[in-house]
Image (tube, rainbow, N blue to C red; front, side, top):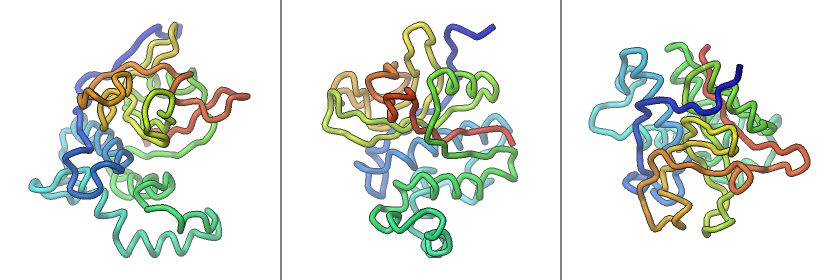
Length: 210
């Protein structure tokens, strides 16, 4: 029987606003960092096990990788598959780049990720139920803020009200980001996440056990 409500405990909150690189537009690496940090900790490991030194924030380490020659070469090798549109965006904002980086860092530790463009609310809940891992959720926050594309770290759900429980690295969108504490906020699926209105689906970078 499906759970009515569930939240993953102890997902550490990271704010993007203290990032060294692009603090106002690095929601993706920051949300990924929250997921990676959790995955490592439940395995008794830490960021040094993926090559990040103690004096560097994990989200800044991910940002560095997105700006590396390796990623530039990877994009060149995959532009035929992905499309020339990739050159219009910063690599840290491209889901396929983040997917590649996560898998490069985490597959050997028992985790993988997959970017998917048609995920229903119930499917999101089912993924959390099955894997018990935070999920990287893509949204549009223009309903009550000046933020359009934005990415958060989903940590749970409330089925009856179709709410996603999340750590929002930019703050609390329900306060129009006047409150910069985005830890464990509840966002309505219909307000922030629907990409395809007909199918009622969203974009999701699923964090999965290998």
